[in-house]
Amino acid sequence: MKMRLLTLLATLLILPSSLLADQQEWRFRVFLDKKEIGYHNFYIQEFENETRLQSEASFEYRMLFVKLYGYEHENLETWQGDCLIRIESRTDANGKPFQVSGALEGESFTLRATAGDAELPPCNMSFAYWNPAFLQQKRLINTQNGAVIDVDVSEPELVELSVRGVMQPAFRYLLGAGELKIELWYSEDNEWLALETEAKGGRRLRYQLL
Image (spheres, rainbow, N blue to C red):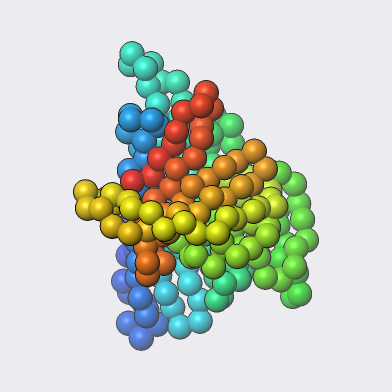
């Protein structure tokens, strides 16, 4: 996984500098309750006409040196504005494989995925936590299995959040997607700060910015 990421970054380095407008990254430590179990990183490259995202996640939960759960996920997305135009992802969820492939073709977005194939409208969004515009959507593509899920997002609540050890104002949203309930926090400048959701057994899965 790390080697593939290095290859991608090396490719970007040899592109003409005029094509690159901006680069961003979000790197999260992932906790199950109080136990750190891995990471989930997001890398964004802004080009003249499109945005490219690469994300990678790796979780491993052990108890008494016995591995109880493992998770590996890689995702590549290409965007034009707030519309997803390509996606390729692969996931191993504790030995169960998932794959998603999708692209804009004419006036529709063709999706081939473990959850089933679909022809969608031309402009769609995934669970693009890094882009607050996704909070305005009513349906989102799950990048793990390709399912298109109806979602509901609460109005923001102004709270205090510890980010890298410093308390700061943040807007908290509640996102419902079927049985999935996700809490999200954003800065006053709309930068993604944190994520928390319920895992199996009533435990809490939490993303903490590095």
